[in-house]
Image (tube, rainbow, N blue to C red):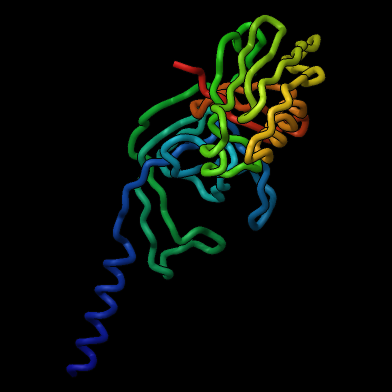
Length: 228
């Protein structure tokens, strides 16, 4: 009898724990992507970062109950998550039930920027292929300055200058040959990668994180934040 009571108590406690709700704040990407679950479908993408990181999206194969997805809107919102008991999980479904609570922030679809919109000085907050600590240890603060079609700045060691030309019909760019001074610094890896990323960039995308430089394959090269 005692063992039976303990078993029942254990089942009840396990059941209660399994339906406990937790609250989270997430971002939902502005567009759905092709994904493969049991069959091919379109999935929304989410992430829990405080500030959006374009490289950290995760496909969500189930819906968020009560949330109406609107294409073209980057949405920060609060949801609850509840882990369902296995006997209540539908076939081929997630064991986690997500429910919409409220919208915190909505940002319209990231937009491509023109040269005119980029005028001024921008600090470099991240470079693909360079870790955060390495970027902090450079001899000089990396930056870019747009002045008409002239692009100048510093790659963490040397001053650079080049031209940037907007292509016709689409908001993409062609960066000219980069000229730079010839100072030798302790860490020359950052300047080398910096120059490569600038040369390979073809478009600039505005996001809540900053202005992202993209290559021809739509991959992130660098993130800029306007100098205050």
